[in-house]
Length: 186
Image (tube, rainbow, N blue to C red; front, side, top):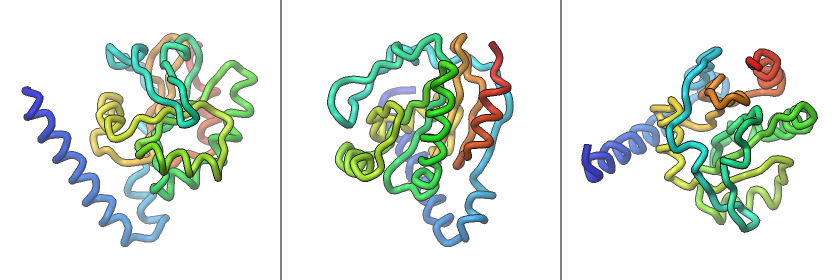
């Protein structure tokens, strides 16, 4: 596929996701969650070949390198400041990080957002985990991890051996994340 064909495909997927999000906006929050939440169960999939080489700007400045997280249990949460389910799950991600970090785990947030709104959100709602600014390019990254619809929030858990262990489209909650951590292969 050429770069222009890939661009058209990416744009089409983005527009389809935007239309779907618009349609979901007319549903109650419970109905929208029921339609969008999908936990793929326990996986043992390889990560994209370039995963550990990726780097992102940090909201507070500097660079975030995925290679720094290699060999640790890692929960990656894709979110945006304009996404109500993303905002709703943030306190549970903060609580999960507080407990999981004692066991060597790490939560990483990747904002699928413009830098200014992400920074403004984080200044009003600080988190205790690392955040990278993935921007709209993060949609392609989500796709490479199995999120073909481009919906948010989207979370993946990566085991210390570097395999994709869990994947979920839709908001998570503390109890679910704790069960994921307990079932992670060593």
